Length: 508
Image (cartoon, rainbow, N blue to C red; front, side):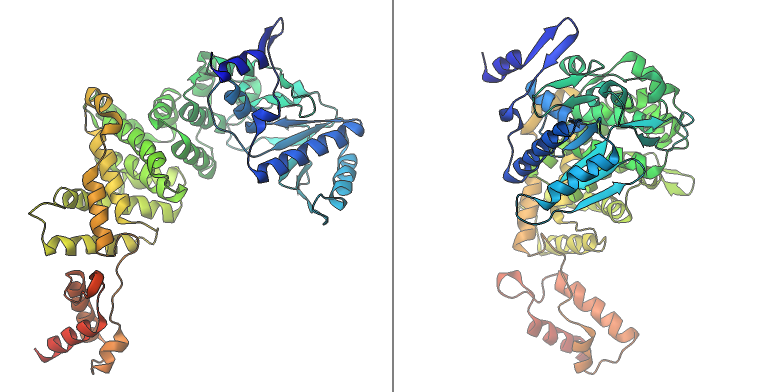
């Protein structure tokens, strides 16, 4: 029996009231910075206990901790403490006293960030009084108002949570996991289930959160929860709130295709992302654009992990895959389908520009990748590669040649049949793309676009006046530079050669 299986059996057991779980220090091991926050949370928990209250860790940290006990999931490092049985003034006194005796010998700041509902930031922790939600008209798009209430029991406070897997609590002093709504069993069964049908529909964002968690964890959606989601109107939901869930889903899901399938089933496409709905309806079937987009999206998620892409680069790639599939359907009104989706998903102007430029220029990368390293490659292709790097730089989004090659890789995988995709799996690498990047590195344009080696001041020295003549000459000189006419050792443009070439143009 594996060690993880043995640990799970001894730490999680069935009781007449349901599953019971306890964790220990080994379950919460982390780096030095995290260990310091965890120690501070334990100290604060003892101070709260000695003051007559109780502090519990809540939220994603507890969920992820339990998932790890079941052998999957990642460790969250954000620690949120919820305090029961103390007034706001009593909690302030405890935090103030701890701030004066911080372990580093300096006074620590206590920042009250939520004065209306008792939330404090202290030594890397989020500390809040027990809270309940003030009901809002269902589905009106606003985040429900939260009100602190120190006399609440844990089960009452947890009722405001969206899903049972997020409604767990952890007592750091005993290691016990508190579970009032069956979240442990739902994690064991890999199921997403709402906590309370009345409170769930108060915030339409919860429909998008179900989509996000389905993609991240691969959990199935409970039938009643799915029905609730379909009953929630999404028309008033703010774009920025939706955008956060799209971002989390695309950047954290191992298989985003799962989330998109769930999203359509919950009615998200029909209400807020009609372009995705049109794509699905117009191209159903394994060979259709919808299926290709799903395969490409899953491959892109795998590429992100294999290459260790930053969030910024991952965002460009993932949204470009969706945008490329949408744009195959043509424009809708006076805008491309991708533009409409990027707006609805609240993609920043920089990220949207990055995705758009990848969609526009990946065909060039794909064409060049098929030729690089062959006898058909010429100096003209080097010029095309330099020009590709330059064009990507115009997006001002930190794009590199590799980004276009990665998009081409994901889209090539998407064009495979389901059977071929499964058969190829990780073997469906794109060596031609890597060869293209290597060529770009050889030409010194892989990581940043080429810049014009000559400026207007250089041409002024040659007697060229400001105006159209100078502008036209700079353009010709840059084209010559991209063609490698000025290259010196190590393929770096040489300014003396460029000046000599400029003089020749002026004489001619």
